[in-house]
Length: 299
Image 1 (tube, rainbow, N blue to C red):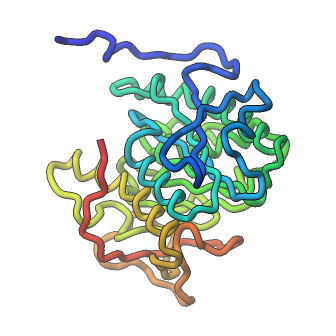
Image 2: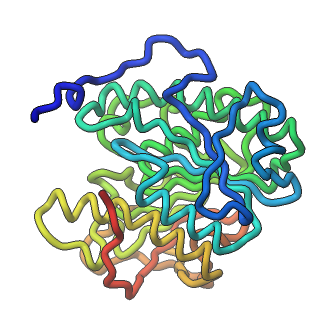
């Protein structure tokens, strides 16, 4: 049966949090893959869900046509669960970011950012440590991580943008609507489909241009399939660095990403780890070559 609801786009016209279309969940080393819904109106919500203020914190935000319960978010979640030292918060805005409603999803990022900022403040009010808290976003989720700072009194400590979305953002989005290096003390960006689904060139303090930045090994099929697969690979590469410290290294290179042919413009300097263990305060663009041939799972 043809479902008309599939084509019904939701455009949020009011920005009041909490909102039932922006849901927060917590995963802990003790709960594993069992998620706990977080209600920022209930001050017992965090303690009763297993939140440990002495742990590190990560906020994971999916992109267009995504959800917190499918890849690549589950790949990231499981990587942090493997570490066993992190409170893992996921932001689910699937109901207002469905295909084919990209334009309304782009507008709805404002609401998601505002509500996520309230989650961030809620965490800090319950003992969370800002210096131990990171926001990791994929595609439009990367821009949401940046927009969260618009609603905070102080900058976030660390943001990781996984192939931040490019369509329309590059043309119409000002600094309020997109991730920039001004949104946190340390902004890292990983480019895997630069110039197509992902932003190009340097936009953070430190940017990693992986395998030339546009097409990733193991991504086969038509142009659309290759682009989506490459776009998702940014999350899988980062997840690998969460599980295996210093497993992916980059060399200094020119700021242009994607790279043309094999001329990556290497510059003098030592290799540095990409991802979870990238040194705080590092700046510049780094080129990465991986030997992976495994297709990153995506829906």
